[in-house]
Image (cartoon, rainbow, N blue to C red; front, side, top):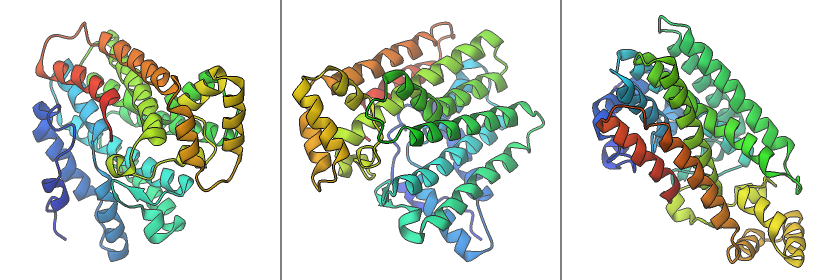
Length: 335
């Protein structure tokens, strides 16, 4: 079986390419290791793995891990292994999320569940998770395996908390932020912490990098939720409006329900409970003239300011600059 890098990865530049230049060789090695590890002699499995390889887009989590390591010290072979592991975990969550959301589009291509059904998608997600732990166990230290295991549990808890609160029109902002933290931010935090730790950083630096990743991850998910409400599917590259369809309240909606005029709040509640064909468009048209999207964006920016403050104690380097600019990318991206 060929180990060549997939042609789509050669043809399409990641939006983070200009930010991750200083770890470009290591990222190429991560993609090569990913392809080598996720190979099967069974054609039916191999076909699914090739298709899920298309989900590698921004490579945010490997970039975070590698930049954190380089900003805090020297990159080791272990960093490449760990960067591959976190991307496998992330990709597994994407495959499972698409099942939960009944999504049909991911990275401007068909989702696994749309192509092969929910059973194949769930099993492929399990395959990715189990292989990530298999690869992580190749490291001498058990520290990384414990971090990845704990983080994966937290991600699952976050998803379960979100499902528990579906159609809860009284969802408050603290609970929403807990969901955001566990379903997205904890994995970003783990990436930064592992990158710093394996580079030999002291405990205070490791904890600052953990907070950097946690703050950035929260902001990333808030921006994702904003795009799900007001973005364009052709630009974002995945099925939009899923939060509304699944009854999952996000920050702009929570803010609107708490601050808008009474008649507008009543209308939004009616729309959220309804089944109208143009439900998403009507909700978007109701919220856009308000300041609720701006409020959510401002919350994300405050988190990014916190993340940037965590970098101040690091020595100046190309990797530190990239982490600082990466923070800005999180809240300005459109995909």
